[in-house]
Amino acid sequence: MNLVNTGAFDRLQQALTTELLRAIKLELEKVDAPEDMVHHLTSSIGFAIASLIDDTAGFVADGESVSPMLTFRTSEKTLEFCGGNSYLHEYVDRTLSKLFGSEG
Image (cartoon, rainbow, N blue to C red; front, top):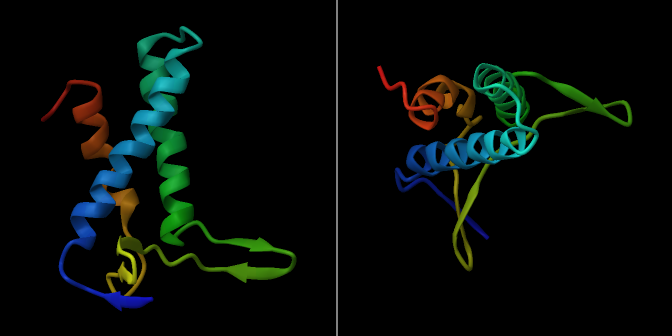
């Protein structure tokens, strides 16, 4: 696999953030929770997951510190990489506004 930085990474991580939050929201709506609770839980769960992927939350597995590095497969042999950590967590609030219809 070849790591590349074509400038598509930001667009792809925004799309991933949208899909993560949409999936969380849909699952919470299945239990008929009030809209404000769905919004709050989607936000907090989404931010926690994004922070783990971005390596801002940090975690240990089997006594070893784990540092994820997000890439996107863009072709059979190409991975889009920004050259460092992702920053999905920065898009959570903006994406929530769009998902819940309160863009501002």
